[in-house]
Image (cartoon, rainbow, N blue to C red):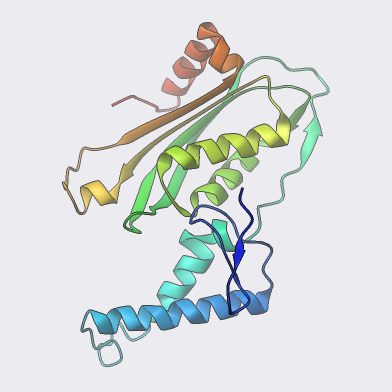
Length: 221
């Protein structure tokens, strides 16, 4: 990850899908206020009388909270705590987790990416709890990005945490930049897969993973 570049107001910029450094409560409040001000300006540029319209009167503040604390929290809030514990039983068989809900944002148009993810692990010396895959996925996905890079980031985080012998990450999602605008094709979905270690090198292990997640609801369009 490239080091963030300082700017004149003392903050830092990062790429859209990169987290900022640890931010204190005061800094987060300032960022929310800045987003709220920008949201007001956007509504005014769209010629919306947001102060007089009862439906939009609080919209700038709602948008600021939504972006900073929900849909883009992976940029502004720290990674969830993930306890790693030893693989004392020396488990070496594939296990899979999914489907995990994916909620992300397209960095091209800032509209939602909605879908599901499946993760397969052949463990090495360390493990994490089942719920931690969900928490980590939520944190990674809550950023403006493209799906291809999001899947790689998720795989990188899992690999750095537990160094599995094999790792598979499959993400299947609908992009509202294609279904809500643009070509407006409601049937369009994108599937990305990342295979590492034994799941990349062994066709049998990869086939076992793909067959296992079919039982968890995955179906290639």
